[in-house]
Image 1: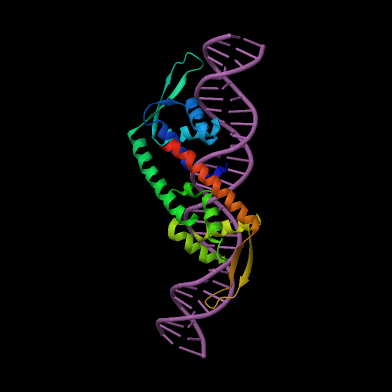
Image 2 (image 1 turned 135 degrees about the vertical axis):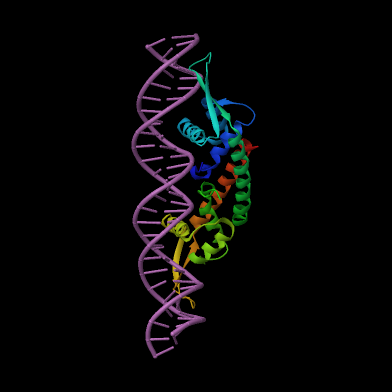
Length: 101
Length: 101
DNA sequence: ATTTACTATATTGCAATACATAATAGTATG
DNA sequence: CATACTATTATGTATTGCAATATAGTAAAT
């Protein structure tokens, strides 16, 4: 799959998985990978980025099947950003669609 | 507009403008800019790339209102690439759509 | 007439950003 | 001990942004 297509959209895919519930990194990797072929390294970079940007907060929680999990929680700021970026994405699709028609 | 969204798609937008007729760089800049806000520098890099890749050929032609224009012509290889990449783009949109729903 | 400025056209260099790949490391379990 | 689960980091690559340069006509100003 064309690597470039994902640029900018992966962020949104990750954030969107956090709207309903908190999730941990490994879980997100599996979720996203089901559709988009993304490796753990890439996912964790994204997670670091959106945390640095204040879109998510994190907390550790014990697991009964391995190391502690780091959960990611969407902040208000993250929610706003997601909505705004989703709108921008749709707008972009419309414009690009005209050029690709 | 989010810069990243364009990654990989601009190529296709440019190639798609060459399906029906040959066009020159400046003309393409204006065409694409109507929808997507792209600067001349970016456009010319794309043109260089798709030429190096053999997706287009070029030829010069006098203009009566400025310097000679460099026209870009879509090759058979370019046409194939465009079709294949457009399909991949649509497939990507479908998968990303699931994650963004 | 000559200079000036502006539009049309093409090109290039450097910086910034995001994804790929691969390697490392720690914990629990069978 | 091997394996699955979980997290992290370093290095490389590709694409776009921005800004600067260059050249040829055309129109305007002096």
